[in-house]
Image (cartoon, rainbow, N blue to C red; front, side, top):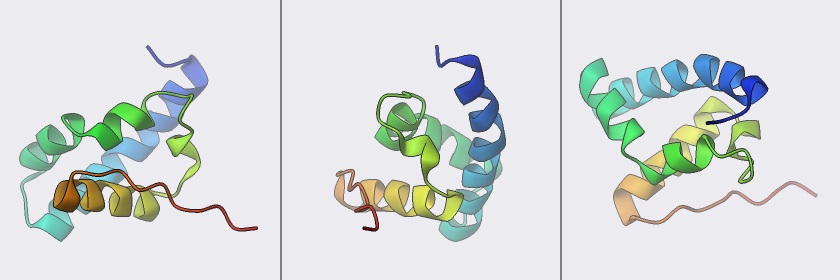
Length: 80
């Protein structure tokens, strides 16, 4: 179970990610929710040690979309 601070952040971010998935992938909210919660992206996002929570919703969607396309999670490089 993620810590309370992370849980609070995720309750704001996850619906936005799901809405974006539904719109971009032409899916129902239910199908987008199911797809996202079964993804490795969600698993890593909900684990505070991976730090995905600090990325923006658009960037998290890109990570998710890449995972769906290739099966791989590509972490964006940090700006120097």
